[in-house]
Structures are given as structure tokens and as C-alpha cells.
Amino acid sequence: MQLDEWQKLIEQIYLEKDKKRGLAWSYAWLVEEVGELGAELRKFALNEENTELNSEHLHEEFADCLAWLSTLASMAGIKLENVKKRYENGCPYCTEIPCVCD
Image (cartoon, rainbow, N blue to C red; front, side, top):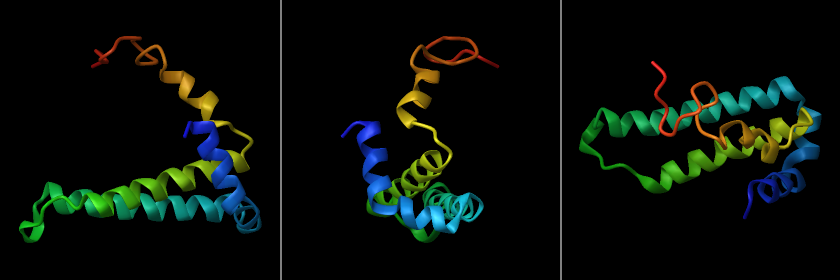
């Protein structure tokens, strides 16, 4: 599935509900999901409870973050397919791959 197809799918599933919630509250949900992703990454980084990286939880959290980002873009009239162009030629500042910026 391409990024534009993903965005259309998320629109079909959630856009009407998210429009009713509004941009500010939908953004708050994105922030909450980023926090949940951060908590999962932190568990691994700090190796709390000697746990292994739970890829299933990470997949879920990354998917949730991407879905909320997608719905926010749709609500703002932004196509993610166009947004990704910023990085197609490398770093948008130094244009290198990999980035050599300080």
C-alpha cells in the first residue's frame, strides 16, 4: 500500500469522526499516541524488567501514530504523498544521503 492509499483508507475509517472532534483534540490524541510509543521505546532503551523489545507493541504504536498523523494531514488539506517529497533528494538542508549536517 502506498502512502496516498494509506491516507485514503484512514480517511474512510476515521475522517468524519475526527472532523467532529476537531483539529485540536485530534492533535491531542496524536500526542498521546506518541507518548505511548515513547513508553514502549523507553522500556527497551532502559531495559526495564529485563524485557526484550516487544515488536508487536511497537508495530501497534507506530501504526497508531501514523494513523493520527494521517488524519490530521487530511483535516488540514495536506496530502502525505506530497509531504514526503521534502526528503526525496536527501536531507532538506544539506541534500546529502546520509545527512552531514552538524
